[in-house]
Length: 589
View 1 (cartoon, helix red, strand yellow):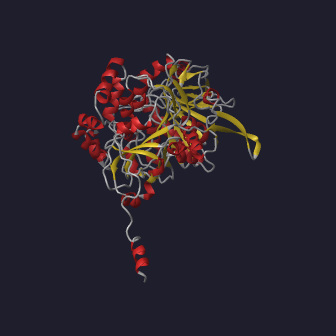
View 2 (tube, helix red, strand yellow):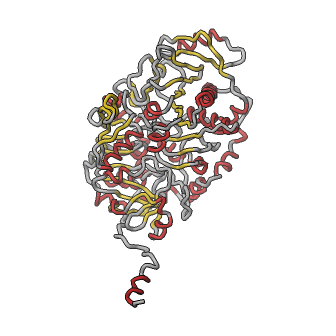
View 3 (spheres, rainbow, N blue to C red):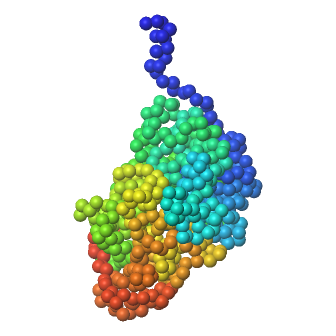
């Protein structure tokens, strides 16, 4: 063999450890170099949230009015801080409020919205994702079945229209206008110096925002690695380096969100810091305490290293340990002795148990193969049903909107996106797959079960706004479920503020909402497509006539009562114990 040929061949025997441009820089340099006032900034939410970069953005623009448009799947803690500090002109989102333990209105958001100091543009999760996808594909728009017949259709008329189906012009489809941010922020598990990045699933909104951004991505990463690690996990590599402007080393850069390992074994992940999240929620109840919190954790801290020093090494070790697959088994030991099988069920426990019975009946009768549950009592009801049905060898799987599929719920924490549930999943995917294909797609055999702020006699749900001034939280995946699932059950306590004649804002249209489950019984639709009271909880010694009168008093319309009222079986001890193990601190129960 020619010596020259031999030398060339030998050069291929080992791959280069580094062959791209070194883009490593500090967080403050990255923000300073690539973000300018007036930009539309997309803050990407995948398995992780770029909290560290968001906090640095706040430090850099503190006490200025940069007039940002923020594009994000969920306007939660870090976005609420930006809004409070007057940094944000507009938020394009699916949700704005406190995320844990349940979706709850945030007083800061409500006040800013009421006083017209910030514009909140509301979308569903699938619609939000598809708008970024359209921007990434460069096609201008994409079709969607969600949004139609909701108030979001009319209030977003500049970005949503009904059009004839191109190949079936007698039918209509929704068309979403593409969105192209100026720049995106993402946080990865690991990246190399040039910006190839590994993200672990589930992927929530995926990476369309990165491809859609005019000026690329500022990327933070837990660890900087050689390219041989990227190649080893190329199936988890989701971001090409040509999109990346800066790579910022940032351990715990997703805190107080977490970082699930999900098949990546080189480094430890860490769990969400629920105590920290609840601390912010409490601080945000008062402007004074919120300003103190912002100073203590963001503006009064020089940089991310200072933030980690304040957080402390013990908390970091604890969060790493909590991310281990069986950590829930140790934690439940601390509360298992408080679980009583004999206590009478609370109103919320009774509602949740009835919802699980109704859900089981529908799964059996109609052979549904999947359940997408919303956060709260609805997901505990779904968990109860799934556990029971699986024990009976009924083939049904649980779905959570960010991309959990086929998971088996773990005791101790009722939060639907609890990291302890991730190792039990049969598939870890994205919101597009969960809501677009499994719930809303051609082959779906899915039933939805969700909560609501309000519901009316036609089944229209409202989780977005009451009147013109009171902001709730937004759609999340609620609109996608009511539009896409075969049918939807709504779980909601019965009172006149929640059960109204007509909702003032339709977050999810009620056409396929078949059943309402309350703490006082079940409502189902009559031949006029209006809800009537059909079932009551089979309490020992119940005065059914008095119960019906109370139902009428608490319902905000002249509700009909079925002539053949039927009971729902009272929860067994096993049911009560199971749901109490799911929610031992009674966040929902």
